[in-house]
Image (cartoon, rainbow, N blue to C red; front, side):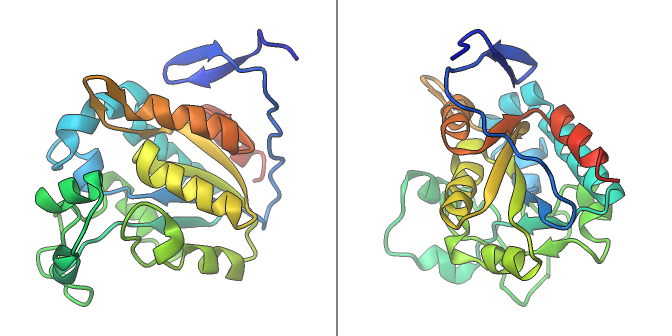
Amino acid sequence: MNTKSHIHYISGPREDAGIPRPGMNLIKGQVAVVITDPQNDFLSPKGVAWGVVGQSVTENNTVANIESLFRTAKSADVPVFISPHYYYKHDHQWKFEGALEKLMHDIKMFDRKGALDLDGFEGSGADWLDLYKPYINDGKTIVASPHKVFGPESNDLVLQLRKAGINQVILAGMSANLCVESHMRELVEQGFNVVVAADATAAAKLPGYDGYEAAFVNYRMIASDVWSTAEAVEKLSALK
């Protein structure tokens, strides 16, 4: 194998691993863009998680890259699916939590008053980033029910994809080693062909812990391929 090949990584190429890149030839009508958690608490400087994810979001140009995926998918008439993260009052009554679940509950991340209550939602941490609202609120984007931990096992994303005849997924969103990676793993297990647009993701950076690097390794080892946003845009644009 050619161990000198390169793959896009954050702001430029890095030497690639000597493992296959099966890739994905996009088929109109079978491919969709899936975005996890395009919400203020992750992507706005005012969001409760910005202190730990902001550096990675800035380095990857994540906000603009996700917007590029939205814009290009809409222009190419490729369906877009959103898998959001919401917590309601009853979710704060869970009897046990993992490390990051506890953190998210403690800082009231993605909090809403209730599943049928939008009071205080507009502009909140659970709301979409304003930049994305024209794309998400266009009457065509499919917003799945909320996932509750990290993966789509607890929501209807897989059902919605299958009912739409989708078997190819370009995956992006927040956060890289949590919801994006968990969605990638479950979609692969469910038989979807998945590519990750890696610089349209980002993750927490803490001393000794780089969530984005951890996710990138697993994207490369599990997904059919890892693309830059520019590569994804080019391939989506060719479907017009």
